[in-house]
Amino acid sequence: MSDTTGASPTEPSAPYVPSHAELFLAFVKITVMGFGGTLPWTRRMFVEEKRWMTAEEFNDVYALCQFLPGPNIVNLTAVFGSRMRGATGALAAWAGFLVLPFALMVTVGVLYAQYGDVDALRRVLIGIAAAAAGLLIATAAKMVVPLFTAGIGPAPFVVLGVAAAVGVMRWPLLWVLAVLVPVSIALAWWVRR
Amino acid sequence: MKADGDVLVVLAVQFAIMSLLALGGANAVVPEIHRQAVDLRSWMTERQFADMFAISQAAPGPNVMIVTLVGYHVAGMWGAVVTTLAMCGPTAVLAAYLSRTWDRFRHKPWRIVVQAGLVPISVGLVSASAIVLTGVAVHNLAALCVAAATAALAYWTRWNPLWLIGLAGLAGFFDLV
Image 1 (cartoon, rainbow over the protein chains, first blue to last red):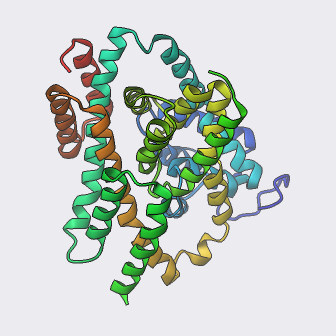
Image 2: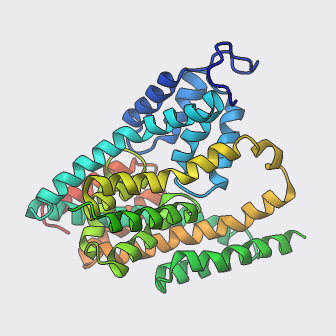
């Protein structure tokens, strides 16, 4: 994996190893198509269209990225790129994924600085912000409900503790996690023992 | 919109820490971004924060791009670059690095226990984000109705969230919110 210049692909499971440019462009394309969600498009392109990866490999990478902190989908791009072409491949995939959203957000930032006070835009954003809050409530509910109906265990108490400390008390995230992550892992270990 | 060096350092450090604390993805650190940008450092008003979250949800691309908007607002182009790199860089390097050894520890008992302990943490963080954002974005009965209706439709139907965002934006335009 460390040598990225080798011309002949050696892995038997991957009959074709994409170049750096192909990796970059593949992720640019994913961000263009993935309006409102890029994960399904990433799977479709890598597993079904280009066949750069098997479904098992994809699930494996996804499991790792869910385990680690940070923006999951961004981490996913780096892992894909690294599996294909090492460190520089990771950089190519990561940059391809971020270049268009970054350019778009800077453009929006410029426009917002200029027109953020225009009355019509203010009204639209107030509506969208309320809907965005609603979407986040639904996302949280979809995660909370299975945990609270899974039976007696420590998980619901950890959820309530984190939500109260960060969401209501507004305590610094670093300190809350420094205390509650070890507690939660210890409880998970104690339950499974 | 000045690229003050001190501000850039603060942005880099704070967002790099946040990326490592983002258990469960970008939505987990919305309260911390709000705490830093509105409460602690007065980089923006409550309303501006709500706007930026709204824009990042409505725009194509991953939700994490809210940090680019925040960075641009605080320190211009360099601010946008710094927050984006700080938020998207460290954990990507970590992920790429660990993916080489992932097969060796993915089935280990400790890995499974750690993950079992992290799941309720990330669920709690997303719940905290929902609480904070509702407080920031909902200030009257009409907005509460929009938030509740959107939450209900997103929870019980499989409608594309973009339709719900579009409808809410339209309702806002006609001064219904």
